[in-house]
Length: 447
Ligand code: CA
Image 1 (cartoon, rainbow, N blue to C red):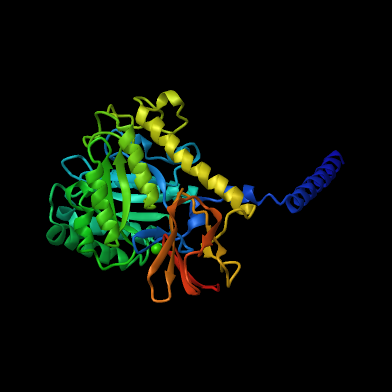
Image 2: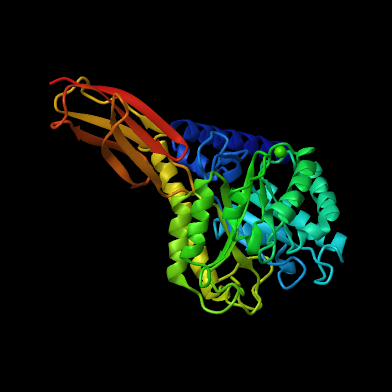
């Protein structure tokens, strides 16, 4: 009897709580909470490469920010686990994690300890899929062309198990050494390995290393691979690689290939020495301006300045500020700043302050004399803080008449005035170009 009464009491209480919950869900139109609860992979879906950009499932450019785990076979080995990845997602706000599987037999990597290393990589991949972030499966090898059949076997296995998951990004050759030939060594290796991956997984992004520790992206851009959804690795260490490497990256981007900064350090190229904050900030601006995704080197508690963790930091996350090195603190703050942009932009998006797609409106009034208003919108793509926006006016035969806008703009709605005081009556065109979006509209000046 007592049991039945308490059961009845329990069920009516449950119904009450449930009804209250349903009512609050209906009346509370706080969609933000829901959007902020979705994972980055739910938001972006299957990534692909369009021109020199990585785009989401809607075709809009996106950039990922996260951490690379250090060599799987050495000091970082304990960090290849679910809780560490979860901490990197929840506390550091990483949208991507790179699993760097050491390969070389002489270094005790995968070729010496196949099952041991594979199990670490699989743990990180499974964690990233479960947690809804992207994962780079990195063949962390300086001589991958000497291990082609082993790479093929490994990547076919990964593609078979995980190829349907949008989370996976393959990286097939971490860093070829100084001046290793792109046309004679790296490209033929990449073609063979990619063909094998594509026979199983037709679409996930594959990152290909470039000569000279993944710096000579310009060489790859002069002779790119003919497969789709390929990005080329650009690696830098801020205290060593400065303007000259950004110029190489610009050449490559202008030649139309997509770059992915799958590894960079705030330090010297050795992975240690001084931290160069000024150059690091220059690189962050450069990567922002070009929508480049990045992973910082690295999660490890080794005694080197590029390491994010101090000696003895727990293998399962829960790090306090005293567990982080100077570089770790600096990079964590940076990654968090992107997530704050994502959140604030999504809050705005829900309030319709920010458009969901690029647009260029018809000018108003039209016809006009002599001023008119042109409005346009820059949508919110997380990970991208600014978009280079260019608006130009042309006459009917294509002469450029005026540049109305040429600057980096955060997401939002914009309106500008165009004054045609000095122009003669006639038809003019105005064009908005930004990212992969370009649109032209006609306007009529009637004096
Ligand atoms: Ca796929």
